[in-house]
Length: 287
Image (cartoon, rainbow, N blue to C red):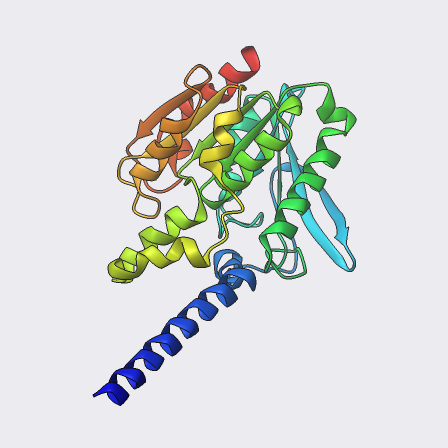
């Protein structure tokens, strides 16, 4: 009996050790980063648009060039610049351009870029820290442009892009007039738990915070913002639950933050509430 218990003991120790080592490997190898940012079938050979635009390529690392586009109003002097962080699968050669038209018609110019390994940008999106560095480097280059620096800059983040937007606003608050978020979440562990449920892994969602790095702690960063901030979230959002948007608002600075709940599909608010949506941007530049 004693020998049997000893065997059981060593089996349990071995299993525990394997679990711990597996968790440490997944965490420090940034295995989850690859899953978060990998998007298949999003590359294209030629950028096309019927809008007025200027195309850019940014050298962010050895042999790494990131593609970005500044969309401009046709015949109106720009009243400000929107720095847009799009959702996971929204590249610049997509119908995303349609959502820009109401804002361009009001006089905003809109900049957006494609992260590593996405659209016309090369490289691999396998490390969150590199992507954060890229985002801030490109932001600094754009806001230093003469056509941008003299007028208000608003950061707009949707879904996955909302985490980048909040980080950017926190890191460069002195250069930003306001922040608008739609359909986003407070951290990657938060959204990871949601998708654990979707995969019927409810009993294992406790492991998500252990294997995912929290490099975009939006719930922590939004507390530090004093600039006008609007959080938009659909009550019927099936990709990023409404509760995750509420959680960000709950910890925010209420003196400068508003929450607007809508009834729409995931990050489709500008199509269903065009006038009010555009007015949120207008209110920021009027302040």
